[in-house]
Length: 570
Image (cartoon, rainbow, N blue to C red; front, side, top):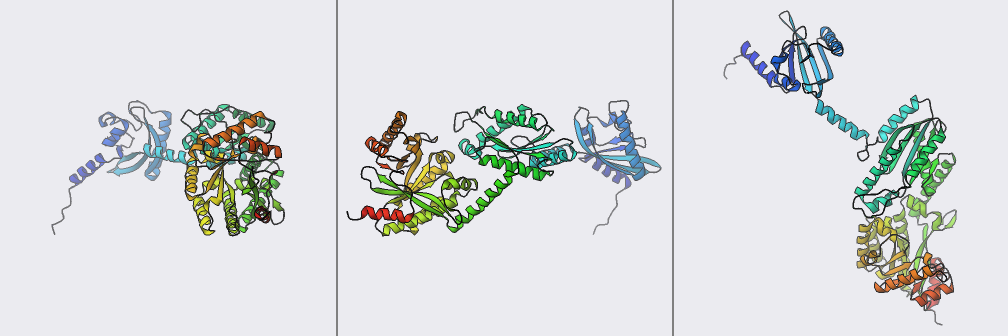
């Protein structure tokens, strides 16, 4: 092993000097009076001055001749720390020669050599790190789309407001009515543009006494006001509602060229009257918001205690609906469809009823909104589909081959198990696919256009018959009739109600019948209530119809008896 040879003091000093010169961190040496003795290349680069220029100058002075009062105070603090502890560390903002402010982390050490005192300083430029930290902090606290404070900031600022304010505080929650429908219609880019314009318009209102305007995500927003005059806040919120009366124009290529109208629902709670806790105030404002949305939206609701009772009722209804979905409490009633010329029953439309354990038989008007609100549509459809396919199998064994029609909307079509469930039910009960008819509303075509098209094409390949329900009441273009594989068009009852006397209704129905002939589709008229309506529709060329005049919805045993009587020997 070679002999170890320690380096000389001179060599050691040269190595350390070269190391210091090549460090990324800026290094400088000061004498006892805090005058520059030496700096490395990194320090020269950082401050923009050569070593020769600053040697002998006091710390903090580059081109200047004297220290400012603020600089004197800082230096005095540094010296006190160095004298007492021999070490000082802190963050500073310091300008370089070119006026650029640098965020720096500085470290000073006191070193004594042969009765002489020196100070060695190291400076690290942390500007980029601080900038990145600020970006992260901003991302954590502000919504990226709108730039508004997020829920976290709103909670923090409003909590401080409740603690420090000598005035009343009003908490406001609001969101856009039909937001999901708009998002489906417009697409992600355009709905984001709409949200940005919506926020800009609110900012331009310059609401008085506004303390925080926050975006919780999606279409969910919050405001906090500090004010003892509730009527003034009511006026402010009225201006918010009036703002929405003007349409929003989207410049991008959107799904619709029309102006977009955004109606909003607003819930309000009041400190200290409604609660003295921020969480409680937010809950109460949200309850008021949900309450007004259940009433149709497009309005303002200030929290009141009656809302709690209504909310409790809504929660109870949701619980009962979930039980109903698992225990088979939803049952179909069957409304017959007739061939108008012969009076023969060609099939039935299945209409849901809820066999409630304590309230008896309930119609959809009593629960369908809650089904949609609590996203139970697919569960309801599944239960109805099981019962319907079972009944089709029973009727087929009895010699009846009539079809049953079931309604489906966007919520059902969007479910990943929709098609496989229908396919499996047909196979499980050994029925013909054409015995099952599925009705689709116009609104479903718009809300989930691409997905609905795929599902309908798959159902058509399976052999299921398809009907466009309530034709003429939605926003679907006539081109959809060519694009989608429908077998039937159902004329909405609103076009039948006064067809005997209303020339406009008569003309619309005639146009639909002519269109169906051109597209090789069949037409079913809904809502036939009189003999005159039936006769007129038949004369106009309508082949099929349903309505209370012809037959009301009935339970399965009566529907079966109707089929038995139809085919009984005369």
